[in-house]
Amino acid sequence: MKNFSAPYPAAQALMHWGVLLMGWVWLGQQGQRLGWSVASGVLAVALWWALRVLFSQSRFVDRLPQGAPVWLGAVTVGGALGVASLAASPLAHALLLVLAGVWALWSAALEAGSPSAIAYPCGAAASLPQTAMGLMMGSLWLTSSWCATAGLPPATVVGFHVLLMAVLPALASRWHLPPWAAQAGPLTLVLAGSLVLQLGNGVVHGATGMGLLALAWALQGPQGNAPHTARHWAALVGPALLLAVGWWSPTLGPQVLQAVYGLLGAGAFLALLGLGLQAATRFVLPQTSGESFHEQH
Image 1 (tube, rainbow, N blue to C red):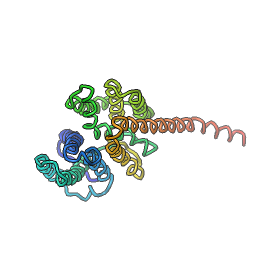
Image 2: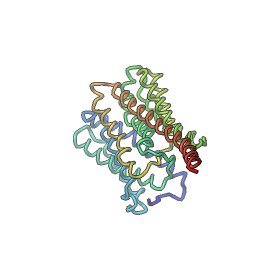
Image 3: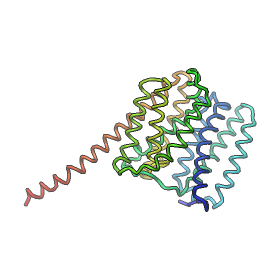
Image 4: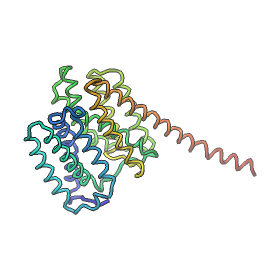
């Protein structure tokens, strides 16, 4: 994959984080403002998420010219300023969706060449922490409206989520885990976070569960190093689930997001079982082979 690295990697990394954070926050907010009638306003952020995944895993980014991140960024910023000035209408929402596609390509270009984190034996297992974090950020403005009934200002809820996404990766990068812990740790945290969220919809349960899910994502790293052939479909599960949350939230409210996290917890449990079986197999098979050789000779 082409590397669009700037002469100052730290500056590019900071820009990449800023682009991701603004994508989750700004596209979600504008989706609520312009397209609430379509999947509760999450369509723009779900489209951006899905296209960003597809672009980053395809060869299309390789064909972009070296200066692509600069002009893509200029188009995105100009488009954002224009869309923000429009009144709510079907045309404005359509322009937001187009902007989400350009923003996704810009994000993928900035992400090109960045290292992957953890090698999982299953592509679906690798996507679980990322899917959990994406659902958290993609449903940010829905969650803030639900939490407003509990007396929490939307700005507080948004700030808490952005803080988790911005600070935890920097803290987690200082932890050096052995390979088995690097694989099992994020999955265990996804399972624990989903269990906490199943216990209730209160502020304490929500903050604790979201914190555990965000830590799982931070420990895994921004990208899961899943096999290339499995990454496409597994990574697109997240945007599909986000659309389902937006579609059913007007009738089910917070329970739909709670149910989706329950599904992710079940997936993490199955993945942990798979890791345990693989570890047991590696432990047992050498002994069995040795005994069979001894018996035959």
